[in-house]
Length: 348
Ligand code: SAM
Ligand code: MD0
Ligand code: SF4
Image: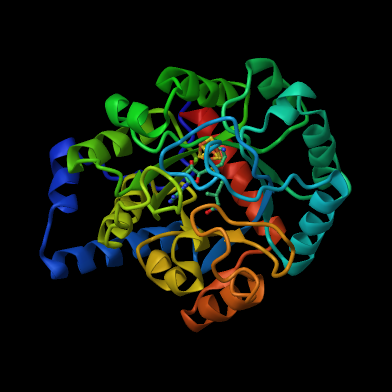
């Protein structure tokens, strides 16, 4: 039996999606955002969810062309201890985030130890701290995914960035499109929720974006993100300009109306705290990349923007959302929502 716990989304064709993405009529786009916001409110009421971001190792074996942390970039890196990771996670949870997103570069040290210390950290966060966990480890072998699934890690986040295979291979140098996609699908089939993601402004066409939006639904991603590309010093794409935000915002709105149930981040990593309002107004229902100030932990796209200034905290986010007539959800409210997402993933 089909379980219909969420409103069904609009079935847009590739052509219709392209029409929206290429529309230069500001009034039409404003109407799209308004519609997306209404759809979000019909699913979430006035609640917005929040994730704490814990980027615990910035060492990486890969050389993604867009990324500051690519192996060849000569930068200062860190690898945090288990105690430091637990301390920052606890602080974020005390502040009121709904989930901890444990994120890492593809650090060979963790592959060597078969992610034992990460599994131990998750055990504490899920057990003692009673808080959901997302793991963003890059591509990992299936037996490690089994280990994460076995301890009920809630989410596996792994972003393809684009579903145009040629563009993928120009971005994620030396990585296999299918290997990345298959890891994500394997995690989903083991009962984990999955997040899929896009980068805007890396040379994609409107047709590529339309294909991506359709694939994201086909693979049953329960969280979908888009981030505008931010040029990174020392990387091969350091001179590529960041796109205007219209593309990112239109994609957020389209995701919302096509897939009313999904979590869609307003990431503080792209434009800092000043970018929050527009993304929420386009239909996002989740704030990500919340990082305590002076913790020594970094963001990804804007590794330090607003962090030490205290701009990426729950206090700042709450003030802005309250001004907009919205509220941050409690952890229990988030858990309820996650439960419905799991039922939805199983039921369709
Ligand atoms: N290393 C793991 C991986 O690549 O899956 C986990 C890190 S994940 C947080 C890195 C994500 O940040 C990328 O998938 C990409 O979507 C985003 N990102 C990286 N560099 C970026 C940039 N320059 N501008 C915008 N987003 C970026
Ligand atoms: C964010 N900087 O939420 C984080 C990151 C990884 N799962 C998420 C891209 O914006
Ligand atoms: Fe490494 Fe992830 Fe950056 Fe690619 S995006 S270089 S895998 S940290």
